[in-house]
Length: 312
Image 1 (cartoon, rainbow, N blue to C red):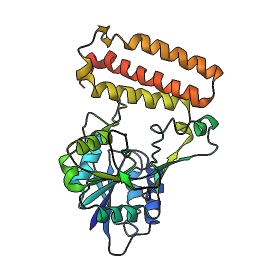
Image 2: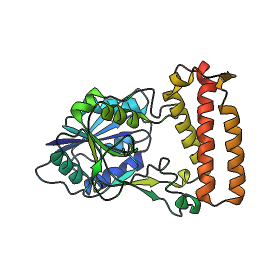
Image 3: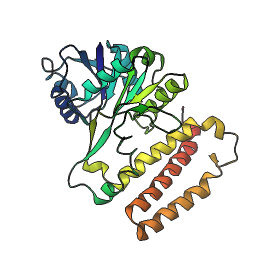
Image 4: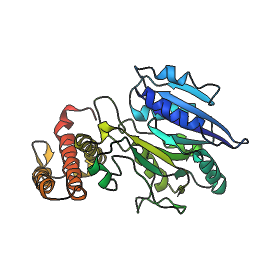
């Protein structure tokens, strides 16, 4: 068996170094062939210098994708991968010492399955913001927290039992058929998510099967810059924009005010006022949920407001 570990990176050289150090520390069976493909998505920092430190320590290859955008970088990794499976992770994680071993064992145990996913555990840079820690379960998307328990179980769209982008694997044969949509994923001047979800959704809807592999664990490093209400608003605004983009065809038949679905205007005001009230009187587990809903509505409204001036 040959496995490709793929990481796409843009201007996070030192974070990438930390992730690669965790790959070096892994326990890898002697009979397992593997490679690490790093896609430099047009970085302007010292990313290439960091990658150049690891030949001899890792079976590493550097690829370059000049066209910005997370989905473009992922598609470049697909084209470059030599493995039978592609195991995806990010440049801001620390992989567990048995991470790749757990995936390899799962691939052998379920050869008919096409997609797999594992645990993502947030690792907050200290001192961690108290309200963030208290709201960790509510903010699972913002911090890529994923944990369906200690039992292996089938992936399932209906129960939203699907992996997140920092820790999942797809058999290369299927991955080359189901590529990443360049209209989704982070890109310059655009915060839009859902590129991994879109691929996994299409895969499972096609009849492919997959499994939750709890022993395939990574830690997601959360810096101080992401432990703020500003980050939460930015993240869930992007989530709202993404959902509006994905459902735009179905919504286009509704009534509009000033280019925006009419229902969004009162919803935005209501959710903003609810958030401000609960921020004053409620614990973080309540007001953070209200903040999320407000930001998602704001994102949907912004998508429609700017759509006439957008090529999306």
